[in-house]
Length: 170
Image (cartoon, rainbow, N blue to C red; front, top):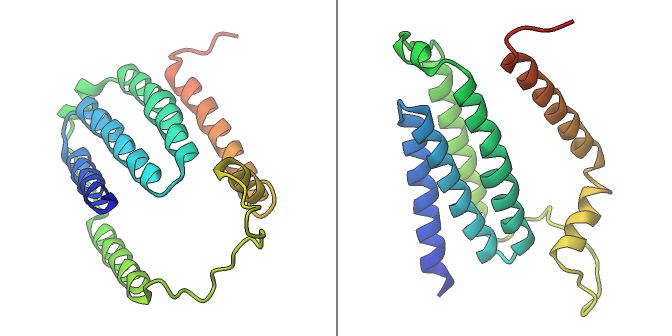
């Protein structure tokens, strides 16, 4: 019963993300990004990570998208739409897409026998829930990347505030 929902959510993620990057209207693209976040939270529920699904909806579909929409509303979209949009990174984007497809093919060709997978070593019956496992891994193995990400988000927030403010009062 889970497989049809997985396919539904996967097709929804792929379809909404393709529509998101092909829209000329940035408001429509932002709303399609919200739809992608909701489909992704459905995949998290199917994977048994209910905490991540709730965090996905609350933080990304709620909070982060409000920041995106404020940023979109603050910049002059009319001027940006009238400008000719020509980007010179087409070759780089195609090469990256081919490399990513090759990587996905290599990972999928290994199947379920991945030799580098190590379990946490919890005994039978002593398996913690999603929140405990996430906290254990996040604050032990991935503490430095977690802190780097928080500093980058802080810098982005300060940059957004500076860019949104037209004049700096002293």
